[in-house]
Length: 379
Image (cartoon, rainbow, N blue to C red; front, side, top):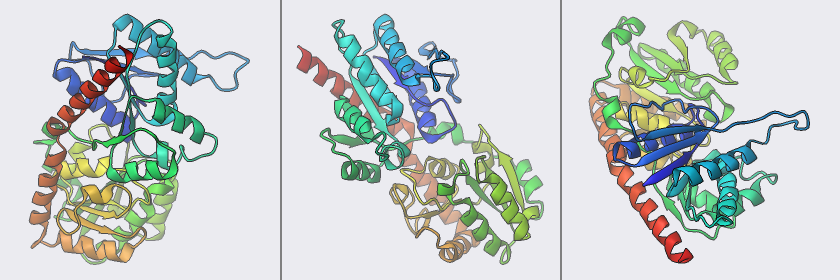
């Protein structure tokens, strides 16, 4: 099958999942064409079935903001026509789904039917999509898609609650390539960070308020008073300066390392003992799944799709948003020498349920179902 994938080419979860999906499909023999404004972060071309088409964004004095959605729709039309794609899979509703619907309508005037699959990832629904400025377009784009998926049951429920959706929404969870996370241990790195055998806590995010990185720091402050511990903060964003100042105010700065954005985050996760994700919104929690694939248990909030991933009392613990005291108590329980090995084993066992080898066939089957339905309707 020839598949066009449209996504944000960044470190964000939707872009990572879309890129890894495309790579996985290419390995299975599908021709995969990425359509976006720059090469996706994790995309390499060591596969003859991978192609990249850059969206050309022109600036004119008349435009205060370049009309990316129009340029994207035009590029989709071009790639579908000349590469003879069988299906477009767009990740994140805004503006990819609306651009795809426009491209579909243009192509239809030329006698070309292109099925569209839209995958909802989270903030495109829970945050941006609910904005009255976008809601009518988001609703229309979802309803005009030929197939719709959501990365968690909670996101599906939230979408149906806040939008007038007439399409079925299929839940297909996020995934990871477990092979990528195997044999990543960098014990010399852990020795450098934890020279006296301290436990290592890790958090990765884009440092926005919704991620509640200050809660990570406050949990760590309580832990370090009880057991020897170090904290690694991976990522960057608007809250970073505030978090650095907070670490200084709490007098724990010397025990915290800010690593910035890392592409090979698995090398850090492979030596961690605990991953902390106290977000106030999280449609799935891909960063947490990556940690679990490295045998790292979780301390997390109980919002969104996180409880579908982090099994309370098995792979870690979930708590109410902001309950730093309970998160600390649970972290101490997980980190105890009597419990840590069990939680680590449970985390890896759970991660194996989300291996791309299990999720990829679900997408392939869904594609076939959508294409068959469109062909049946148009014939």
